[in-house]
Image (cartoon, rainbow, N blue to C red):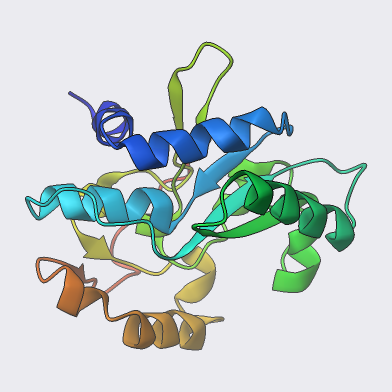
Length: 196
């Protein structure tokens, strides 16, 4: 079984995550995914032999529509999702405008925006398509996620390395998932760009 199929199995076996995916799909947003810790944490739990931990962090919903870039639209979508389920914290961001906030080149899609995320293992997202199939996007590949390797994304090796260091320190990932390893020489490994 390849790693994308493993993610599909992990997510489809988690009734809470599956229901949240259904709620996000109900909004009908273009190029829309739930990413970051939503997927990463479930995979790390699985690799540590645990059932998926509760969804306790922000639910990062990303979407892409260059014709609708107002932050107010994202806030309205967060409110709509809160009305559907207020037990989690929703964070909705149209990736068509986030390049300005992050100091990057314009993003071409949600998946393209994920290439600029802080850690390679975090640059993964899932969505339910119209047929109810869980799709996986992983523009930086899935090797680091399944290898339990913490490696900075390509913008965070040097230029933005303090952001990676702060996240590594503040998140307490090694205490929660002790099998994780920090990449000792992040530039030694080639970062593959794989657009789904």
